[in-house]
Amino acid sequence: MDISLSAAIVQSLLRARQRGLPPAVLESTRLHIADALGIGAAARSTALAGQVMAAQGLLSGAGSCRLIGGGKAAPAAAAYINAALIHILDYDDIHDVGRLHPGAVVLPAALAAAETAGASDEALVEAVALATELICRLGVVCAPQGEGPGSEWFLTQLFGYVAASVAAGLALGLSQDALVSAIGLAYMQAAGGKQAGFGTGATARAVYPAFAAQGGLQAAFLARAGLTGPEGALDGAAGLFRIYLGGQLQPEQRAALLDFSAWHCGAVDIKPWPSCRLSHPYVAVALAARAAQQSGAILRARVAVNASAARLCRPLPQRRRPLTLQDAKYSIPFMTAFALVRGAPSLDGLGEGAMRDPQVLDMADRIGVEETLPDNPGHPPAVLTLEHEGGRASTWRYAPGDLRMDRDSTRAKFFECYRYAGLESAAGAAWQAAIDGHIGKAMQL
Image 1 (spheres, one colour):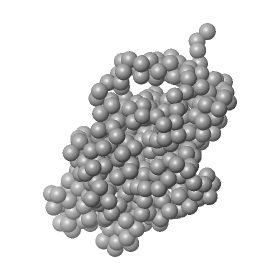
Image 2 (cartoon, rainbow, N blue to C red; image 1 turned 120 degrees about the vertical axis):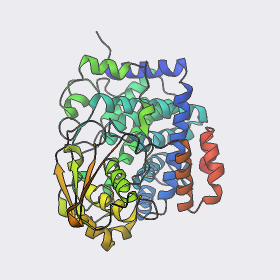
Image 3 (cartoon, rainbow, N blue to C red; image 1 turned 90 degrees about the vertical axis):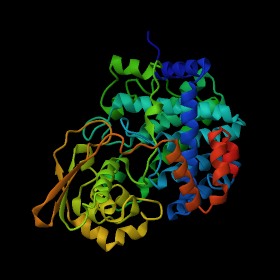
């Protein structure tokens, strides 16, 4: 009889760790940890961060686990707060095919567990790398699009419970059986309905990964204490794939999930701008038009979208005039208008005031939407058409590479985040510590 999928996943992860993780995977993991720490520090000044910290302080109390940007909290509170900090600005890393944010769930759970257990920085980085690989694989086998399985779940949250439990469990040094139990206990908490993204007017979309980070950590601690979770959490009769995603995995999907001949975490991208990833191709084409001085005297603009991107355009009146900054960052019409008028979104420029900018709002009112593009996993192949005075029109298309962030641009982003946080003097040392894998030191600076 085949072993459960949870057990097979744990065995595969432990074998990969025993063989030794590829140097490129470890280097990329340290780069992404640095990116997350910078983003989290920048988010500390937001009203949302204050609300989260106040609530979690009451729920979990004081503790010894470090918070990004300073301070400490109990492990459960630290996991939630750090996850929220990494995601609040919508600036965190993304796996495009899986449409999920690994860093926001995996790193906070691993950090809290590692500090509690006294794990080394090396063990922490390995735990983050392996759990990132797991959540990416879960996203790849699901390959969400605008409709169908996965389209109505925040997969960061749904799969994040599982990945966070593994990240925390590895950092805690759990046995194979305990890791399987942790996955089962994480599944018992699984959630992630996407209404916070489909609807408008709420700020909760900023913190959804935090539930998974905290839940995964809780699952790992329960497993360490001896509680046993259901082994069939993923592929049982009432397991995650059948209940949440409409059916069991096909044999080829299961095989892909367990195949370590290739690594998927290398496809996790660092974001160039603080907004929803599905808006990024539209920001890119708007910036290209603006750079070519095609943004002046625009009578009308049209964005062509697919079924996935259309979610970020409805209802159009509310997407043109968002009520919250989270709505603004999730709106293709608004982000396209912002980029045409103000240029590249930045931490300084894309704030609460942007939603009241009369020029941006006027441009947003001129933007129409056409759902004419084929749906696909990953981000949409954006097309922007501008109609100018005199009957002239110009069309701009997204090109692969428009969103690429290399090490130098990631370093510049980190320094931008630290400057925004008022920590500019510590940026150099913190960056180097994180890149060298000294995560605890980086968080102290």
